[in-house]
Image (cartoon, rainbow, N blue to C red; front, side):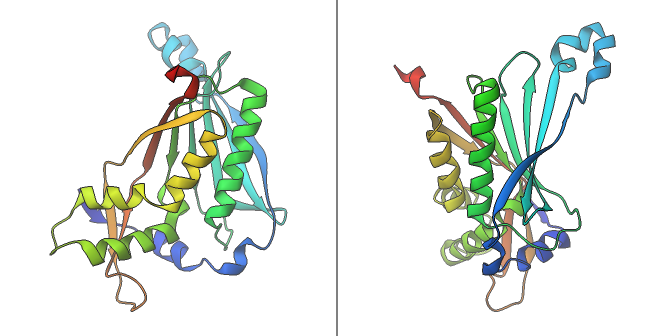
Length: 219
């Protein structure tokens, strides 16, 4: 499925410069909350939702909050089971490099491992603004290889599978004993460009979900 992508992501993509990574990245816990706490009053939903806990880690650069963050989901009394890397516009004008994002991911995994363990942790989700530059390069390769105007999801998936972003996530998770299984994305958005240094269509999955299992499960 292909649809038009919002202009917001175009401006975010263009704002990245090489100098953005000079200042050190730090991570802080911005909030810990239970989004479905009221479900404790509903017996049929209590076991499924009421005990979900969200921990939100913010990316900071030079002491300033960026729009990037990592959300960790867990249940009370259990280790986390999924993690999401995302962005929203909080007034910060810069962009983080892939190396910055991976550094924050490594910090968060180390922190939740020390506090809660990673026994039940199997999923990483990443959303479009976090791989803007990566998608430009992938779209260039896609444009060079695709035939005609027909959308080729298999080719796009192959190119994302070979990307630095997915390799970086897999390498970091391997440090914590997690073995990569597969990744999926269900929707692809695009916007068109007439700038000569950009591909005609820049493609973005709505999200990418990577699945893992524990290395010791293979024994």
